[in-house]
Image 1 (spheres, rainbow, N blue to C red):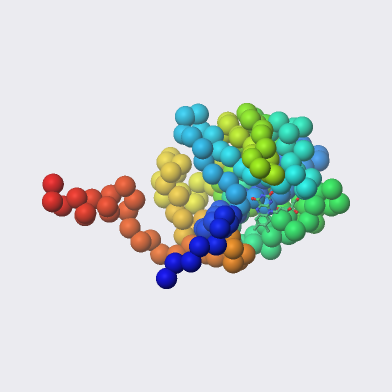
Image 2 (spheres, rainbow, N blue to C red):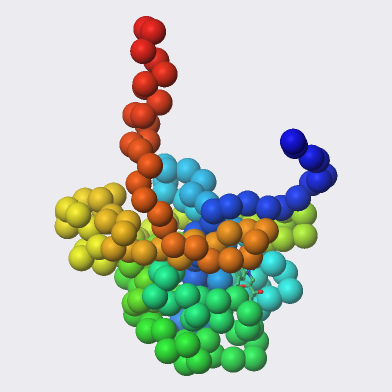
Length: 194
Ligand SMILES: Cc1cc2nc3c(=O)[nH]c(=O)nc-3n(C[C@H](O)[C@H](O)[C@H](O)COP(=O)(O)O)c2cc1C
């Protein structure tokens, strides 16, 4: 039986992204689950960042940020960055996460994350009560030992990556499960009558 609940903002699953803005000397990390690729040409993503935290204004002022995908191994550190504010503490120092210089932007990337995207802010607008930031991806860092084919950035061994999945609503973290099928392909089984 379906029941209606009116407008809700529940979504699952979500990646757990660690967004870094600032400089190598002075950087902050914020945990962001509301993130999506917006277009492939040019590669661009969007993040929703609340107005009450420290990061919203920092991203607007710096005009750039890095997106670092968290893994299960750093679950406690990722959660910490989502329940504390850069206004009060240095999250790199408190978590022990390692800063690495980006190639193009001033904001660092996080060494412990297997996928890091350097982004330049191309649009900042309010969507309702929240900042919506559009970031053009200008560089991509990948731990090649997590790739099946070291020359192919799309060939992630997702079990080796062990991404930290966030379940909105339940407010819990999950691990990735088994492969269910091949995308853009398995649906062909329903086209058999052609
Ligand atoms: C799993 C998780 C996901 C979160 N996702 C978002 C999000 O998508 N957008 C957002 O604004 N805050 C999100 N938060 C909350 C911020 O990370 C939190 O308000 C943080 O303390 C702000 O830090 P800052 O003041 O250093 O910017 C999330 C927190 C957690 C634990």
